[in-house]
Image (tube, rainbow, N blue to C red; front, top):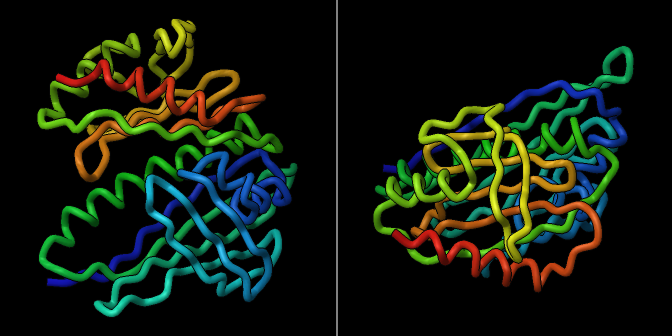
Length: 247
């Protein structure tokens, strides 16, 4: 069985349309909330490229209306697979802005449900991170820090080990305070901004830390750190940190 899908997320921000556009239509902007490293060749015939853990999708820009509308998609594969993104920006009174993100596409094969579930959860995390970025860090750019931990066979146990490491209760909620020892024994204080059974996002004054159950089994750190960061060193440090979470 195959599956066509269409999901939508909406939010309103105090950020102005220029800041929202920069967040979704420039490489440094996308780096600050999505995943991996991103490069944008701007314009109606441009391209958006991403690099994440050996995954290097390329998206053709199909709509380019600065500060109003952006759309891009992958080319359709031989089996019909594709993913398309559309962002609509609308300025409001008193400098607030609304943003709608629609993601649609086609998933082939009998295992589409597992892929669709993982994609849906991921999109919720990414859009919530975008909202946090535009609310607390608009106009700034972050360094994406990605690290892969060991493969996990008992995710429920690993998740509770992760919560304990982060100083969280067994059932954390958005707004719960976190306090934990990061790499090099640095104490990190923050607030949970996203939580579900497969991911937790924590916002601090200078970063957004995300810990996610990878589709193939590992715990993945997908952080966004503001300020001067040696990305290679940071990714190595977080990989070592994640190795402690093997059940």
